[in-house]
Amino acid sequence: MNNRILASLLLAAGFVLAGSAIAQTAVDRVYAVDSRNEVATSGFGLCWRTGYWTPAAAANDPAGCACDRDLTPKGVCEPAAAKAAPAAPAVAAAKKCDFTVALKDDQLFEFNKAVLRPAAMAALDRDVVGKLATCADVSLVVITGHTDRLGDQTYNQKLSEKRADVVKRYLLKQGVKEDVVDTMGAGKTQPVPGVSCNDSLPRKQLIECLAPNRRTVVEVKGPAK
Image 1 (spheres, helix red, strand yellow):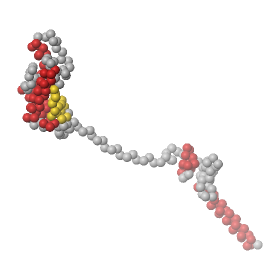
Image 2: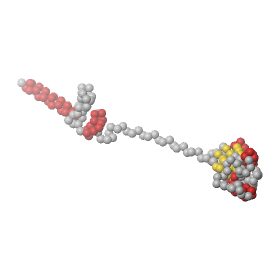
Image 3: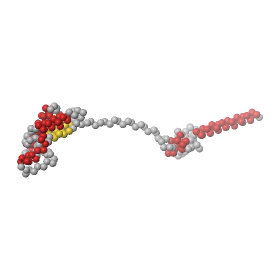
Image 4: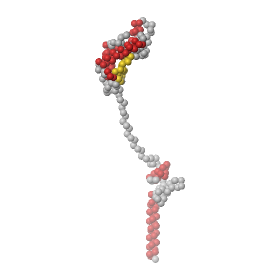
């Protein structure tokens, strides 16, 4: 009799302990699991929640994002943002040593001549040769000669070429390399804008009025230091 009572007590104690273990496991479960220890789902793919489910508990459960992503606090289910790659250093644009110089005023050629005046030489020394010293290199020097509109184009074309050539020869004497220099003549085809002279003027006055057109223009291109 006593043995039967003892066995019953032991069996009852076993059920109590087992129930306690199951209860403890259930407390840790936010979602019900199947025999494979995977979250059990309905026929619609919804996760079965236990009585311990709360939004906060779901947020801390490994299955929370898969089961209740829309109910978890913002940022919990988003992957950590990848660090942006450092921006490539900006490449500084190469500095240029480009400039243009046009002979003017007392630097202009006399009518029907291709001889440099002292003022023109001084201007070339200062504004061309002087500036070339600030260049790392000289890629191109273009010299264009011009005339006024008096006379025919054929004659003026040749005269403009002579004016360009005389400037070239002067710059070569000052050390400019010949292989980067190019000359051309524009004749009377490119008058200075804004110079308006009435052909009815006396010849001497007309020649004086058209003086700004009797010029050369020097264009320099190259990288700066």
